[in-house]
Length: 350
Image 1 (cartoon, rainbow, N blue to C red):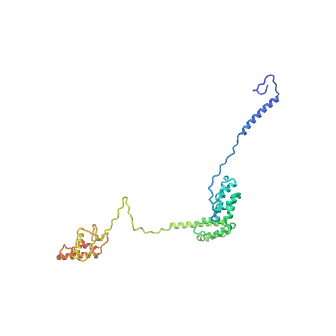
Image 2 (cartoon, rainbow, N blue to C red):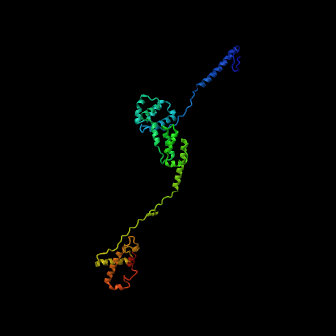
Image 3 (cartoon, rainbow, N blue to C red):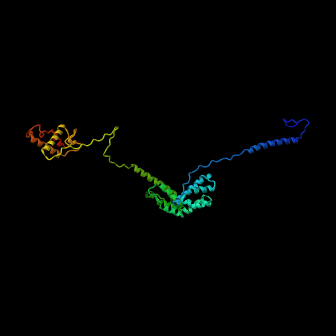
């Protein structure tokens, strides 16, 4: 009988013990190998990494403007390949991108080298551009610009930014004492006067720059307070005032034209005409100046009439009345003795 309880051997069959053991051990090994083979057959997936976020493309460089545009192009290109290194793993990809951002003179100069494949990496493209289009002595150029830099009316913070940008490329980059003296000579007169009471001889460049920033802030704060406390200049109000209503604005009434009877040639017909007109205005209460009502000659919108004109008209009118009726001079109702006569009143008031 076999030692395994589930396997029944026929009677009379005898099996060696070592053969039965080997058989079962081999079966176990076969089962383990089958299980291990199925596990090994399962494919293993490598972990995937997301690409870096794409940065904006570098501005196109045309080879004009001297060394400053080339410096900006080089700095932008290096930053692009540093941030998006996983997007440009091959040197050929970097060379193709760098050449794709060129145009004009710059592209023409690098065309032969790009076609012949002489650029091993983008740094070779930059070196070729620097040799052909860059400044042959940039240190001297930036030193001249640094010597000519002045603060003027700008804030010291803006001036310090430009000063440090030029100093990094100039021949004074390794001379901090010389840079401190150049910075001191470039500040404004107001800031120089403010620093006159401070001993800056033993300050280093950074300490001197910090002190200048503090003093410049104090100066600008004082100037702002003085400007705020200054009284505003007085302005004369406008002589004309416009009155608006919620409804339509009425048009201004036209100025009446004087309608004084002109002095004629002294003929009887002319004298009679003037006398008739003056009598009509007196009886109807009209103005002697314009012939309209609701006001006297002294308040006439057309302007007062000269006394001489009214006096002549009144004289002609009274002369004509005396010629027609000499006794009217002694009449109580006559024009000469009537103090309330509108004609005389209007003439005197004008």
